[in-house]
Structure formats: C-alpha cells, structure tokens
Image (cartoon, rainbow, N blue to C red; front, side, top):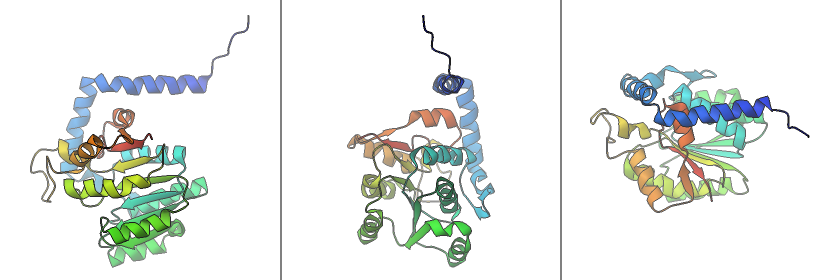
Length: 247
C-alpha cells in the first residue's frame, strides 16, 4: 500500500489558517486588539514609522498584509489615492522592484512640493507616477484609465479623504479597475470603531470609509470582504477594508 508522505510546508500553512480562523471567536484576544486600536489611533501611533527613509502613515500590521498580497498577486499596477509623504508609494514600489515588474500610480489633491522633491529623488521613483488633482474628478479618472490600459493585474488602495460620500465615490470610480483575484484596499475604516468625536476632521462614526464599504457592497457583488485578513491582523486601520474581487 502506498502512503503519501506528509508535507511540512502545507502542514504549517494549514495550522496557520486554522489558528487565524479561530481568532474570530477569541474574545480575549479581540478585546485586547480593540483596546490597542482605539488607544493607538488616539495617540497617532501610525505616524511613527518610515520606509526607506520616507514617512509611511500606516500600521506595521497593514504593511505586512499589503506585502503578502503584493507578493501573491504580483500586480502590474497599484493605484493609490492619497500620497501624503509618499511612504506608501515608496513601499509598494520597492516590493515591485523585488518582484521585477510593476508601477505605482499615486493621486493626491495637493502634492506638497517638499514631498514631491523627496519622492522624485528616491531610488524607487523609477516605478512611481503621480497625478495631482481630486481623485473623484472624472477627467482625472479618465487619465488613470489611460495609464491602466493593458495592465493585466491591478490593485487599488483608497487612502485620501475619509468621508462616506468621498470614499463611496472613489469605490464607484476605482474599484472597476481592480482585476479578478486582486484587491481594493480601503484604509481608515477604523474610524467607525473609534469613539464618536475622536477626530477633528469631517469624518466620524457613521460617516467614514467603513460605512462607504458597507453601502458599496449592498449593490456590488463583485467584491467580498476578506475576513481572514481581519482575523489575522486584529490590529489594523483597515478592518473590513480588504476587499477581494471575486468576479
């Protein structure tokens, strides 16, 4: 009788998948993560990090999740709304450099001159393009479509204005660029889970990226929330924001 030898690599992956799935019902762990999420967001924890010399206003957990997705999907193009200091653009571009292909297209209504200089002087700029303007301007979106033409695998990251209406419109405009099997990642959905009035910005509980995701998914079944990523990270600024295109 022939027996199949065990595969340690697959066994490890299976153990990890089972552990992550179990976190969905781990009340103690989820409560600890929720407390950290609230307190760390209040105290601007995400502003503490950089990537290859540029500030990256992200949680390390989300950076790891993005690395896993980019390595798996190997996108030809990542479209990101919201540039700030450019750390995310540099991060994604550096991963594409390791993969050996791909470009990052950053969009921001106001690319500050000092940030533009630093981004353009960075070694990873060779894989970066930038457009200044409102992400929901239809002429700008038409330009994005032109640059996305012919790209086989496309990922989208939404991280600009965090109000419900703006993010919902971004989803309507940019989610169609995402190819099947890739992701539209909506950042700062954590706003919905914060205490009301936590931000001195237009967004708040009931008016934020997560409410926009919920609204968008009511009428769009091309995407599903990847709850496995939520269960794995626990600490994240994008809970329920990792949207996988399934059809």
